[in-house]
Image 1: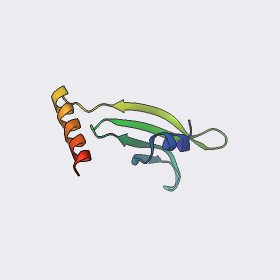
Image 2: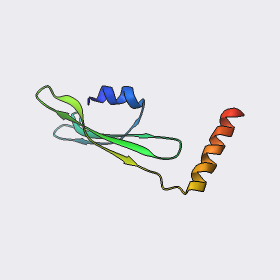
Image 3: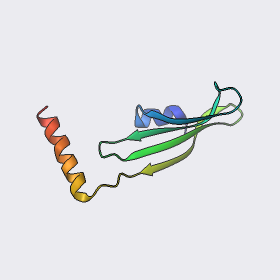
Length: 86
């Protein structure tokens, strides 16, 4: 999957880190993270691969937020109330 396809699917994100080789303007691997309102994250690692030097997904992982059931429900209720009465 290409970098553009991931961004179209998940939207805007924040770049977590970047690894470079040679001059600092050419990144060969970088990690980007998307988070939700509960603190869970999807982390995707991209790299420049292939003969066309395409930006492709080289790894991915889901990082769940460690919340108890009651903490998750409280957070969801607070978010719903804020959405109804801003």
